[in-house]
Image 1 (tube, helix red, strand yellow):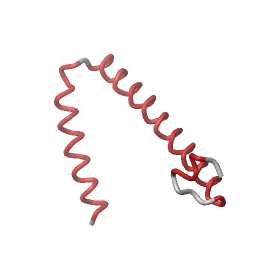
Image 2 (cartoon, one colour; image 1 turned 45 degrees about the horizontal axis):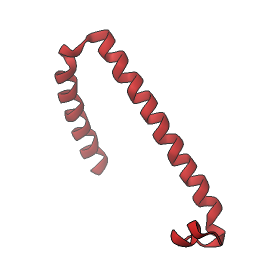
Image 3 (spheres, rainbow, N blue to C red; image 1 turned 45 degrees about the vertical axis):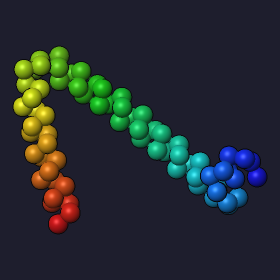
Length: 72
């Protein structure tokens, strides 16, 4: 057993699913970073910075209501 698997306390049968899960998590985070950066840049180019505080406030309110809806 490799020292990395031993350090993470991963059993021999769990190495494959752990590797696939780590890869999927990496790809999801990478896609999120790329699309978030693209979305913010596109928004700033189209509307400018004067709408940024309004969008931040609307985003907070919508997030609050959606999370309370999901929790209920």
